[in-house]
Amino acid sequence: MQYPMSHIIYFIMMAMKHYAIAAAILAYQSSFAVDAFAIPSSLRLTASHSSSCLHSTRDHIEAKRKEWSLDGPSSSLIPEVIEQMETDTEFKELAKKISKIGVDGMTKEERAERRRALEDLGVPNFMKFVVSKDEEENVQDSHIQNDRLYRSHPTILQLNIGLYCNQACTHCHVESSPLRKEETMSANVAARCLELLQNTPTIDTLDLTGGAPELNEQFRFLVKMARQWAIENERKLTIIDRCNLTVLLEPNQEDLVDFLKENNVKVVASLPCYGEDNVDAQRGRGVFQRSIAALHKLNEAGYGSSSSDLELDLVYNPSGAFLPPSQESLEGDYKRELLDNFGIEFNNLITITNMPIKRFADHLAKQGQMKEYMELLVNNYNPQTVGGLMCLNTISVGWDGSLYDCDFNQQLGMGIVGKSEESSATKKKLSIFDIECLTDLEKYSVLTDNHCFGCTAGSGSSCQGATA
Image 1 (cartoon, rainbow, N blue to C red):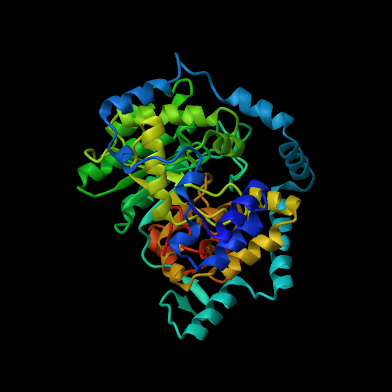
Image 2 (image 1 turned 120 degrees about the vertical axis):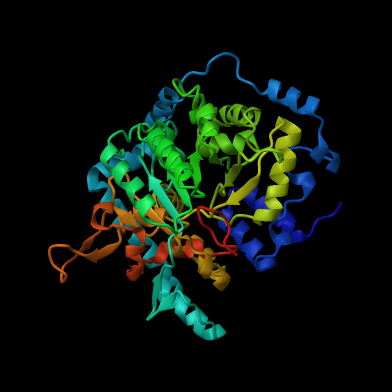
């Protein structure tokens, strides 16, 4: 089979880690076309397979699960992760920089880097850009008023219950690691979040994230109480656990899968590739094998099966400075490769664009790729994504109870600003203790900045996946 020259050049650039050039080839070849992102089957990580792989026998699945199972109880990943952090040059440089200028200083520095990149490209700030594009296309967006973005009724309450994690992924926009032990949600904050959930009839999803949320002592309390309340009040409520998979194999988490199943928790799990080398390069040595073993545990409990109501979604994010492929196209690849090679089943694939913030922003700056990446995001702006922005229907709560428009704003310290109880003329960053209902926040405009281009490029990006 012969491939177009653009495909050949693309894979050469990827092999040489020239991600920006590879992304430019994709953008040039076709604006958001599925074929532009499709990877020829013979060039995938494993050999090509026939469609019969989708109908692998149960014996084949069991054999693959046995092949990839871990012998005996697994040890904690944390000591190895800490060792890797202590020897990894980038992590050491980042830690040194944070100790020197602080997290807030790092945030200001990366924001200035993004702004300089856009100024060099002659691109205005995000909202001015969006409004100008709407005017060019003669589009009227109901969420935009006076050049500001306003949310609709909130349907998703997302809680970041702590930054402690048993991993330290290179792409992590919240910079979680085993060292982040102090930033953890208290019982008081967790209880207040449950009150706001009960006070807001429009909320149909409780989304728990971190860090590794399962390692926070409030995780099971939140899940149990929310599920019990939903049942007693006949309220349909989806509870999401954003899981890194390896946490299922940590000591003292042996019953975690059973707990998730008993409370009908939807698992949204990170797996940025179906190949071992790519996953371990991005998430740490040995993470892929543990992730496969964890997925087997979930499958054995009924997760991911078409005959079960226990949902298991996987999350893909690029390994470099390029846009995700088509979500629909890549999902087919994932399902085939994971079923055929590992006997794994799942429901849906979610693709998420790497946001130019935190660890990924630091990586871009070190590689001199910030301007190229921002140009990629701007050139692939898709007006159809604006109506699906997650900040329009999601309220994000930090581990300390602070309120944000989205998880990305949370990590940048861009809290929702509202009127103080002490003085109507004074404004301050709001917390869950300043409101009685999440709909109270609808009167405040969404805070936007130059990182928001990451959510509107290509097919769009959100915690729920593509938006267009």
